Length: 256
Image (cartoon, one colour):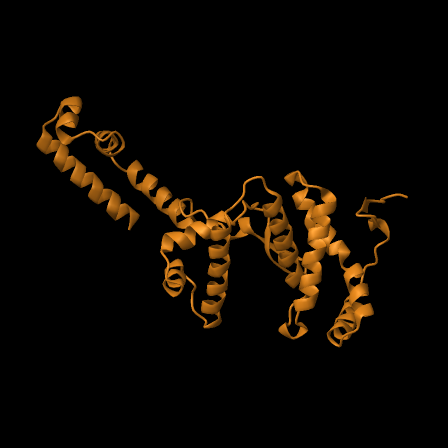
């Protein structure tokens, strides 16, 4: 069969695809305690699991095991999803599916984290949630203070259970528009403002004479003293100082 892929005995080519109206109706039935609706909803959203687990193929873990972990995340998201929140089920489910797969990969990893560090990390996560419920920013300092431990212990515990992430991992997905980690990264050095200042500086420098340009290059690019510059250029140190101040003033005026 064309396009047939079997994983955990499931022929993915014949999986149903639920429409939005069907999903909403099934979710209402699930919340009313309908177990058959729950099973149908799970099967109808397995494609969501498949779309997520593709990014984990390079983890060298058994694909069936990753798929099963993803299905556990799917089931957990179904059981905890609240339609009243006003977000799409897929938006809510994808992070939970990813979290369950990462949890599985941590557990099978050859690098073992001690039980005490794991316990501390889970306490940190719980404490962070309690602080955020009060609409406060859960900083490491606040978490450590509430837990009565050192800030370094909080940071170390969180780092120990964290997995490396891809810049292409999604952090938000709504109506088909996926926001990735790389979309939230900024270049604080090569900003538009920095580029504009650079152009203005180049323009101001171009208006200087050759001797002033040379003095500034020797002074600020090569780090030479005014005495060293005076010997190289062939003028007195006082003249170097005067020319430097005049050049800097002209640059400042040109930029402003």
